[in-house]
Image 1: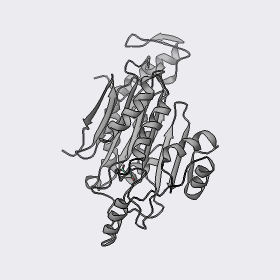
Image 2: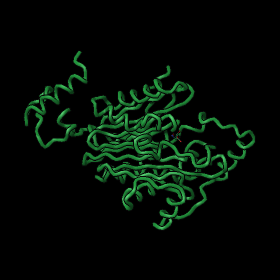
Image 3: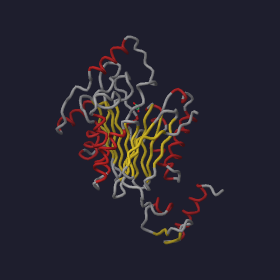
Image 4: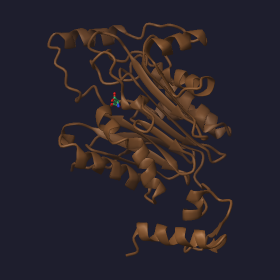
Amino acid sequence: MTTRRKFIVETLTSVTAAASVIHPAGRRISKGLSSFEKTFGSTKSTNKPIVISTWDFGIRANEEAWKTLSSGGRALDAVEKGVRIIEADPKINTVGYGGLPDRDGYVTLDASIMDENGNAGAVAFLQHIMHPVSVARLIMEKTPHVMIVGDGALELALANGFKKVNLLTKESKKAWQEWLKTSHYIPVGKYNHDTIGMLALDNSGNISGTCTTSGIAFKYHGRVADSAIIGAGLFVDNEVGAATSTGLGESVIKIAGSHLVVEEMRNGKSPKEACEAAIKRIAEKQKDYKTFQVAFIAINKQGEVGSYAIQKGFQYALYKNGENKLHDSEYLIK
Ligand code: ASP
């Protein structure tokens, strides 16, 4: 079998040897193409627009994102608008308004966003603001920084027209008070797997992504999720593809998970294979991997998607060819 690695080396050698050569698969490779295209041929998508997001609430978020995508809008606008629906839903206690608080009773939010030009914005440990995704976008577009946290992020948001709200709903407060009776903190379990990550490829062939969460319930005050860390909970490289994650953030941060998925796709893996490689990296490096959940979803420039999780039960929502459907992810521990 010709290994993928060997194939890449051979292809790269031929690219450097001549300005215009025929790719082994019959595609012409010429100067002026991106390095990824030089290696793999055309990256023109036949599958666009397309949007993928984590968990069953992704269906509703996709629905919103699709309005932008189907009318020829930008993937960046689509993903921001899509996840805002989930951030604003008080019944979802793992994202935005209504999120479960930290162990001291504060709802603190984390989010990140990346556009097709490699720009990135992130906010962490943000309180009192309903839409951290939009604060992340503000940071990306209106400041010279990538990440702003805590009070600084709140001040910036308020100065830019965001409204201060109470994010702690009655239900979440009740759940916290219940938890206080034992104050038993384990960063795994039923509350901990419902971040929304969303990736989209628009009609122009551009990819953007976002990830937003209230983080692990009853976490330490000041704890930050992978969802706010560029390269961990989210990574977009418009030449190759994008990835985002859900599950135990500490595990994802330790392997720079979403960046790893995108690099695996750059090296020739399909989105599903790339997600699987990242999950297997966790299994190799983290002895306790059987005790928690992590899942990745990914999309490539051709509009192919994939996912992989540690445990059974992860689902992702995929909207393509006019159909919005929930899919069961493949997983490691059978
Ligand atoms: N990744 C999130 C966090 O670590 C939680 C999740 O997606 O379940 O807080």
